[in-house]
Image 1 (cartoon, helix red, strand yellow):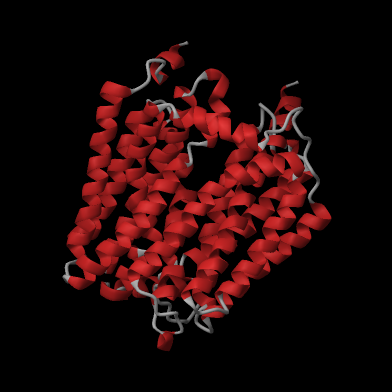
Image 2 (spheres, rainbow, N blue to C red):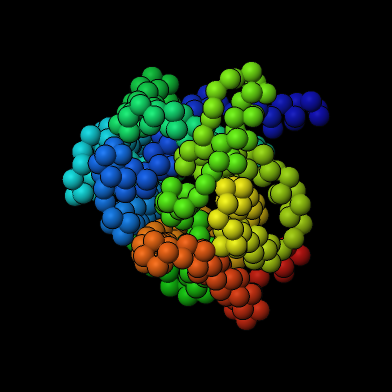
Length: 437
């Protein structure tokens, strides 16, 4: 009997559609993070360097809208896909992504680039809702935790591997970066057509009217919204990893120590080649740290209350920015990114745990659906604020360390805000009492 239960709960308990969906996740996230790992550098680089020559603030505004849309679209896309079918909307999403990526690498005017990246954002947002829904529908109570663990591992694996490939491709041409992303999505379009089977639908699907009523319900809970607004302060720091950190490395940092370390590592594998640190590796460092340490960190914090653990994680992540502010050396930059990633993996899983505990029992799914609001605030404010301060403080005033100190202060204010929230405003049906029940 024990052997049978183990089989049911193990890797063999998932249907084919589950694995097809995870392959899609790997390649779609690879396409997205491959582009995102260098996009800010490409948009700002001069024409002589193969880039488009936009200003920092112009790039910040563009990225803020595009990234915000990827967090908004899952609401609408998920509702439409629930009603008209996952497979149909996967075909639409991958078609939009393939066209959007390819076009972005072959246009140069700001307005046109904006439109092609909006196409990518819409396709990516629709895809997100369908994939998470597919995982939920193709798992059960006994294997759902493992299923979502595989799903999140695939996200980080794509984010780890694709920037390494991008660092090689952009040595030939920037357009190859976008062509590669388009190819991955085109291949997933074929996979959808030949291998994806529509998972079983629930008895009732959520329409657009229900989406509006759910939004009114959640956004009317001011304590819930306030908690997300405070938590968004941490994500102002996170989105710098896709923008100002990349510019900072290009403009200010001598990465020679990192170049030597990479070359020495390559020689251990009998690769007689000089390897230089590429800005694309910033995304790989973040994802690689999570792949290596997430299980270990999760085991350490699993017995602690969610909100204090979130605060501790934010403190660790903020320490990464303190390292940026204290030293501009290549080794310090890499160390700061690793420390920040540890903070991220400490606080973010507990964030979702906290949302699940404070939500009304019959509305947990609805509240979890709106828990992504941190990403809207973080990307919309973080990209614009980062670009503005980088242009004025880091470059204009020549004080990059002050620039990072400002963001470290934002992290500190976020910690204070959550401490006060936990002390005075945490909902009465709090996690501690629910856990006891």
